[in-house]
Amino acid sequence: MAFPLGRNSGRLTAVRALHAVKGRREQGRFAFEGETLLREAVSSGFPVEEIYATRETYESVPVVRELETSGVPVFLIAGESAAKLSTLTSGAGLVSVAAVGLRAPEAVIGPASFTLVLADLNDPANAGTLLRSADAFGCDGVVCGDAGVDPFHPKVVRGSMGAIFRLPVALADPQSLQRAARAAGMRLVGLSTEGDDMDRQEWGRPVGLVVGNERHGLGRWAACCDGLLSIPMRKGVDSLSAGVAGSIALFCAVGNELRAKVKTTGAKSRMVY
Figure (cartoon, rainbow, N blue to C red):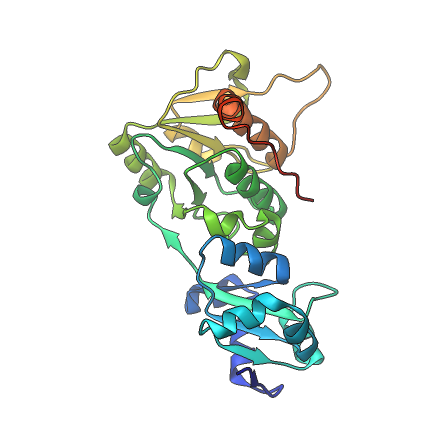
């Protein structure tokens, strides 16, 4: 049974607080919007704690009622309340809440791991893109810099297209990353405009790809890198966005593995826009 909520409910105040990193850290929860992400969470086995939906959405989106049947609390809210819970200009009348699952770096770095490191990225769009690429190209986990964008920022979650529900995510500073990497025998390779040509790189596991800040590059993370790589580009082009550069490097790292897997399994790529 869905529970109607008034516009002044304390529950709504608590969910609105999840728009900000302070609220997410204090509550240990984050919110995400829409049917697509909710279905991604369910299909990934990511536990949903609560759902807030308008009456129209409740009646028209089957997955909401399916989760209600399984024991997830569903709260019915007015359109005005739904708009206040949304971070979008045109929300879908559906907001779900789940626990933040941040881990220690040791939990996502192992002796056979392929790990993506987001070294203090500030742009949520770039972070979301890289999470999505990491998921697509078979990363075992992601380490986010402690001074960068929160991986559970609404724009990061949306941009990840469900990857945030499937990839283990850790928070670290350069020192804790380096300790975890050394313990696992992992080599850390940073993207840089002054690195060695990526075409000549021999990728082997365990390895961590470190993608730097949009404006300042690797910065304080350069000291923990065992080597630097650059993407060859034509003359006159200075750089690529962090999201594009990191995605190219991720594919270069695992391209041969992916091609071999496609040949042996007959798997095909799935394009989602």
